[in-house]
Image (cartoon, rainbow over all chains, first blue to last red; front, side, top):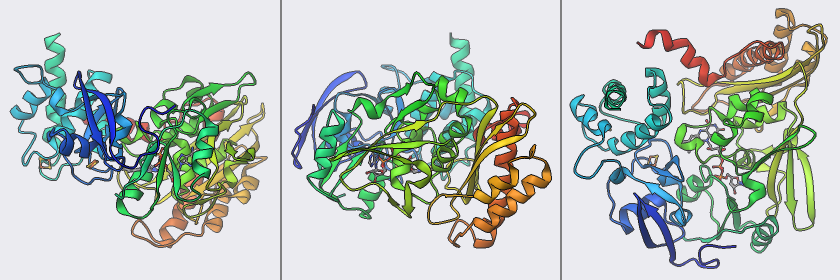
Length: 167
Length: 308
Ligand SMILES: Cc1cc2nc3c(=O)[nH]c(=O)nc-3n(C[C@H](O)[C@H](O)[C@H](O)COP(=O)(O)OP(=O)(O)OC[C@H]3O[C@@H](n4cnc5c(N)ncnc54)[C@H](O)[C@@H]3O)c2cc1C
Ligand code: FES
Ligand code: FES
């Protein structure tokens, strides 16, 4: 029945696949996946903004779905496959979205950027050629205090064009 | 967040036993989009989190032989709005699950969590109630059924006992010439809590006359509420403006809202009428076979031309 130590409020062993690599770590049940990534695994690419599901800075992909890692318990990651911002770029290069964000100046302070890139990469997986409205709708759970969003939306549209030509 | 114990039962009976062991100090965890926010902010303190996502009855959508549909209490919104039988048979429910939070929230948030959280503003509650949904509940002494319309008893309060588990929501088999529609008013296009919302369902006869209807409001009372006088106003009509205006007046009379940061009493009373009229008009048009976009698509349809 239980994959993790059933009656424990102390640390629990979590076995997961993160960015394609098998990972094992100890989590307290109260720790969120976001805290486990940043504080236990030292994977600080995933950012904390609001910590209550509103800003999308912490977004990761778990079991094939975009989720707010601040609203997932670390222990819930047991047995799951997770993609974080660290797993988006190919070895030695950048994802077309990352290139587009740089070229289109789609970031200023940058704290929202990992969440936008992870979210947008999921969008392009489900819908490789989204309309501007579809981009805005998909990214409505990601907040940015700096850019005013237009450059982010343009960068995502541009990356979608580049990926189309690239194929 | 205080430390808690995490358990992940594989069956309904195990989950009920784990809840019953710690009355009031154990809570079910579905998508966690309400529960974890409440635990982190200290608004709720418990000793045990019972993750119900390992229980097949709570994580599956099943179409029964009689055409009714069982949606497991912990099925996330995106699975609900991707399911062909729900898309075809329950457009009002689709309207509501498509506007809960954004894409990341919809990857986790469930109908069961929305209902058990019992927020006066829960978007899926009026659409489920209008569809005639029934909550299937398991407890230590057996199972019981409660109509979704009667599930919420106050803000954050429901008929559920601390040792009971919501297993699934049952939607009755879709009928010919019937349909639902849900919509809400928010100042943004996405990612906001309803200032006011209305869910309607109607059935028509072969002449297009409304034979049966249900109307529920959200965010204008301590719980989602039904509006029987709005139903009376439309049954026997073809949904002419005069009938819809009478239904809107009934909704304004039924609304008992408060003033808070999202809206005033006056605005919410007004919106109750507007949303009721639109929800009924949309449900009637759909029942006639016309396409009426949901709130999530309506925004895209409206602005697509200007986008490029
Ligand atoms: C950023 C953000 C945006 C949101 N937007 C919306 C919105 O637009 N509209 C809206 O209505 N809500 C919204 N919400 C609230 C929330 O997402 C919904 O209420 C959601 O449906 C809750 O489902 P869940 O599966 O996450 O529930 P959980 O958080 O897992 O559970 C909620 C409550 O129900 C109890 N519970 C859950 N499942 C069961 C069960 N099977 N049996 C007994 N008890 C159970 C839990 O113990 C808890 O008390 C939003 C939340 C966030 C963080
Ligand atoms: S930090 Fe998770 S959504 Fe803001
Ligand atoms: S670049 Fe600063 S918040 Fe987006």
